[in-house]
Image 1 (cartoon, rainbow, N blue to C red):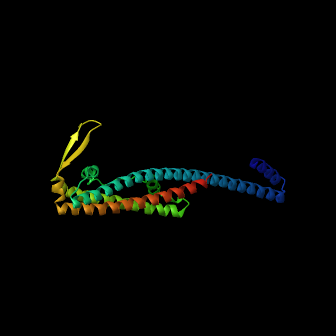
Image 2: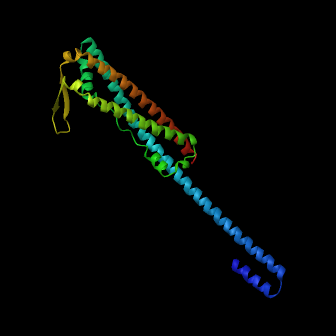
Image 3: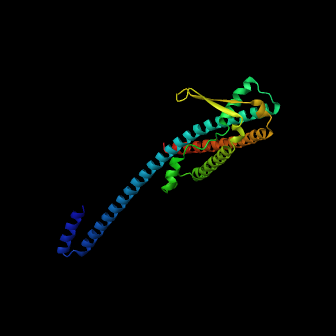
Length: 249
């Protein structure tokens, strides 16, 4: 088309038809301009389409991360509930100096697990990838962006609290170890099991040990509350992400 107009302009110029020449020249400029604008618009549409696809992919991955985090946190909540329950039973047993056969199961669990705190949580890998790559703005919802920032900080706080308690318990293992001896059944096999043996009467006669268990009950209760709060936040973020995903359908 451009070549066609150029030939016409050359013919008009050779015939000294200046007015017609200018008209055709302007027409050629107009067509070129329109072509450029169309090309730019098509390019813009393509970029928007790519951005939309990328944002949708990120949302799907964020949703998967939240589903994993929910299951992970639910497991930690169950574990902390067990720790809290066992510590209360142990404290009450030592205070009353009575250990029933049913409570002995909880006592054994506590003696085996009193120093076990959860120092890992499912990673927020997709959020961290987007944050480091400067692509958080692909999430259109400002609330979701801010919620992830807060969730990441809360996650780090929970892990730091658990590390602190864990390290503290390791430094004070002697308070328990002087009363407890461990035996490994079926060592080196898939069915291996650690069983504790202890002198309950001596343990119940140690006020400092009872105080230690009572402090641990408070610690487990605080940590349990943290994990429940984390689960609540994760659940809300997941629901919001799923609402965003529906907008792409």
